[in-house]
Image (cartoon, rainbow, N blue to C red; front, side):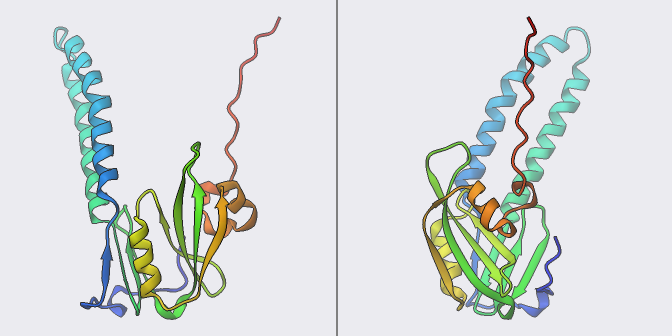
Length: 198
């Protein structure tokens, strides 16, 4: 979604006072380990079954595609960053797109504790909003540490609201849907159940 407050990257030149924040590296390590743990036994069996009958090139092709996707995701994760200073915010997303927002556009910061999906533990989430309450930047505790969030809070001289209590995505969907990504704004469609007829 285009950001009406976005400025060019050149409008926010880097200085020694900038803070460059990176996503938590342990999440990337866990993801790579999970991909390797899931794909290695599967492809070992597929190679074992396909080599004798000569169909191994198609298995190799699928294996290479999965490897390439893993490398692309890893590079995107390693390049993702948030650079924040008293002049504004520059975010480079996981898919390489860069958003730069001047401090003049920032209206407030909201810090919430939100239940993780299908879990009992919570994670902090930080929302940087414009003066109309529209989302400029979202930092989820899954990817960003609380220290990173505190750095953003300390760097931007704007009002901050720390909400009491713990919230769910459903709470935000009801009260502040503009803070959610488009796919979070709609409740999940319940799975269709096949019922045996007597």
